[in-house]
Length: 572
Ligand code: ARG
Image 1 (cartoon, rainbow, N blue to C red):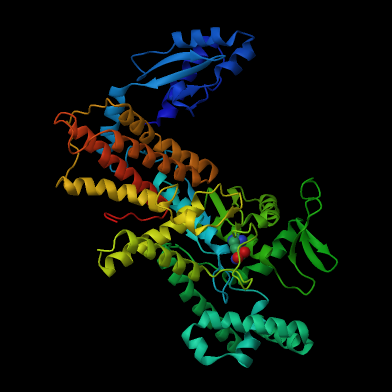
Image 2 (spheres, rainbow, N blue to C red; image 1 turned 30 degrees about the horizontal axis):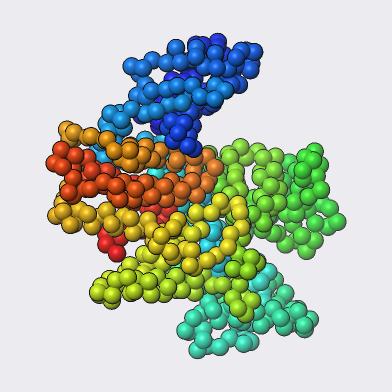
């Protein structure tokens, strides 16, 4: 079954072709304003222009080719030549019931299933994850879930930054100034402290810098002691990251960090040179893009003067490896927009190197503090992700305690966790991802607004209706009579049936915020229905329809939030 937009597009395009003799899209989309119907075809104007016809006249002729027996709507012409469609209530009722009886809520698996690698999160080891990693982790996880739901084969890969020049310094710092007790308590925090001190020392004292370089060279040559230390740093980091991912319910199929690609790097540089794509320049080796006006000024450095390879080299090796191992149709990199140039160079180099899969940088903006600057602690440090999640739960706990003092501690704890983590995720996913946004606890945790707690609350409220009616096991029946009459009921169902189109829109632009808006509108339309129409007390002939509306709304909320990585609660 196509989505409603696809269905109307097909019918309207046929009619447009029959009326005009042109093959042009009818450009059907949901209307922004219900006054103009539910869906609108905008393509007549362009066709009329091409035929030098009066657009309203052409629109008339298009209407003559629409078959009322085939299309569950009425239509008319508006403005200069828009065609407005109003969906038929009986059809809406049937569609609602069909969604209710379908495990996937009426969303078909895509017929053009792709293998998609999602590269996201990718923190750097020996450092705690900070607020900068939250966006990649949350957006990447949501996209992976949505692509999977649509029927793609998704491979998630955490490309952790576990290799680099910082490990020479780490090794010196570890050997000279580690506080054992602190390390045993919180190893990653201690490593980070050590790193900061040694970094400052090596800036001030060239002897320290020299020692760090020596240790780095030893590490790179495979010195067993240094390798063992580096492995310890990796393991300690991994444990700390896993703790955060567990709290966020984020999982990866692979953890192929930068170090994994070490054995392939010299071969990559050689191959690019052999193919004439890279060449020496002042002792270093670069890929040049002389024939590309956008990148002509930005050669891609893949080997430094001292022979060391870089982030760029690793990313090239990663493309080769993924192509040979996973055979992806598409690879998306959910990484800060500030790395835009790197990805443009990387993709351009990969194309020349012969890789044809779609490569996309899904960039995102910066999280700002209340002062409009990149968010920091009072001491000017980046905010640790773990501390941020703690605070989210803490604040949610205070709200829950106030609203629901009678709940047990364990219940309050559980609700606080689901609401707190959900609020942080939702507050991020809600944003147009390319924009910077201001972080605000109050906005994120408000129970009345575009927030996770609001949606979770609407969900829990619906579940409580079923409990109150002792209808916990209520299920829609295939033959049930659906009677949609009240305008709030029709509005609610019209919102629900957008779901499949919404997911496709998320997919097209890698934009989870489209799903967020959908869910918020759904919850709002549900509340309007709930305020206007009795449910448990409704007359016997319409009560089943009202319950059906409640049940299916709850399932859309749960499924939609689930696709964003956000949990729901049966009661709160
Ligand atoms: N570790 C990098 C950082 O923290 C992100 C890596 C993203 N993935 C990639 N394949 N380059 O900035």
